[in-house]
Length: 514
Image (cartoon, rainbow, N blue to C red; front, side):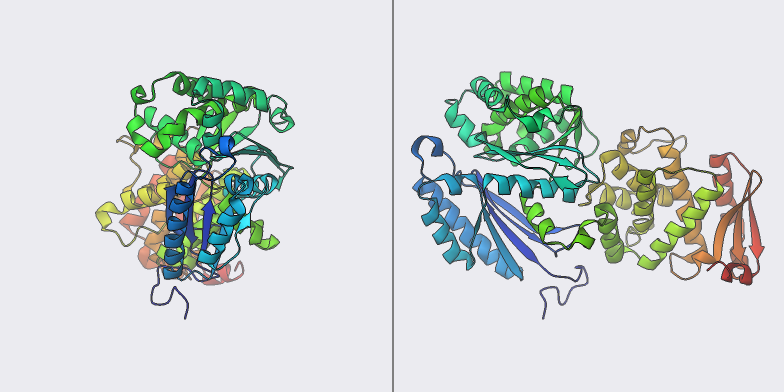
């Protein structure tokens, strides 16, 4: 009997899978629902044990840190078993591989976990963290940096591959020790060590993908200081020059006086300025166009490495949207029909789409009905909140807002002159807001015709006759022609600024097309 038995809220597959990540600063357990292109955590907890604290001076792991870590790992193993994990992967990084007593520590971990931990080399860390970027972003291009407690790994990411990595002794704990707890001195050390980095040099003008808890805390703080309308850190983008100025501010400020610092956990604030020191050195050397925060890293990279090649090449956004549709839609098959049906609408309306715009529309179709269990008065808000905060990958924040607002408009109407959700401010590309409105209207019409059930939507289609759009209906839909349908067609007519007409056609006309 599988661990998922007795619940319909989980997807089938090989899982759950647990990963215990023994870092230089933290020990973390993440249990994923299953091995898939869009891995979803069902449990995620960390403990800051500080295994790498003092390592640069003594060469050893402190006994107190070892005791704390083993206690946490024992608990995490129990939780992994309680979750019914079919596999437990244990990873160990910089502190463990470099400490003279690291081997003895690993033996204790192996006894507790009943499996052999993988002690990753610096190049292993860079490769798997790079795979994390391939897993989490759509066609990424730039340089990946993973800053832990003991080391910094860098790797070039381009054309769906991870280049040869490099590792530097620039983890937060180590840098604090090397600089005698002086952040400005730490910035100078980081600058010196990264001065000869060919990987950073080759990244000029491209993106820098930032991985690691300290950098995520920096990103979260920047987000809050700027009243950013979306509290999702993955794919949070900041222009490089603005992030450099922010890092300089953090470096030179008293940590207690920094605005919104209370939003950062106290356990993270002690290393915040050292994270800023390294990120500033990276930006100065690399000169990237943008800094992008990543919630996916070495753990997700290890899972990505286990996927077959045909699964790896799947679109992570579409895979995640399909999962949510399967779990929450009245008829997942109907959401696939919506993709083909809105194809006809966009063709008839003469709306050209880039590959990115098309995949966003497809994701919006897949997620268009996930709010149906909410009270009708709140379905729009339910969709907006669920989609905007979902554990989706492979989509930037403007794209996430587009998808969420398409579903929002499907329930709430157009709000042409009313107040818009704050999330709407993220959509700045010309024409995209109107496309979200158009999709929302299309979803409203499709639901009116089909009750969101599969099997009949493709007996309708949009065509074009001169400048006029025509919604062609099979004869089975004649009873649906009334005030509600004509009103919604009129809304599309107004949005597209062209006449839209409803016509009933013989069923055989549609049979020839299907």
